[in-house]
Image: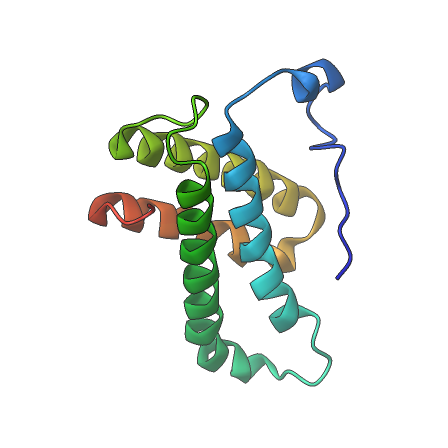
Length: 139
């Protein structure tokens, strides 16, 4: 594994990146990283054919939802009763959805400007957040 990008989003001013925020913003950032990691294997595999994408997408989404759910559950179990996490599950849900959507919209802008062939990743992320919101399933 290679872990990079600890400095935060380059387009966001340094003082804003240093400001204190909810730890759920970092949880959302990790979930977002899982999302990109799942698609990275699809896009950067030199043996993949374009017709394979539709076949592989359900498996990519399954892995992403499983690993994200496991991560959220583990995080919330570990931080249970901590003063920095809301006690109300609905509040946690709203915060996570907000931070996930914020990150996905930021990435949509990035992909529109730099990597059009990756635009499906933030679009699928936004769609997933909206669908999960309707079903109440993020946490």
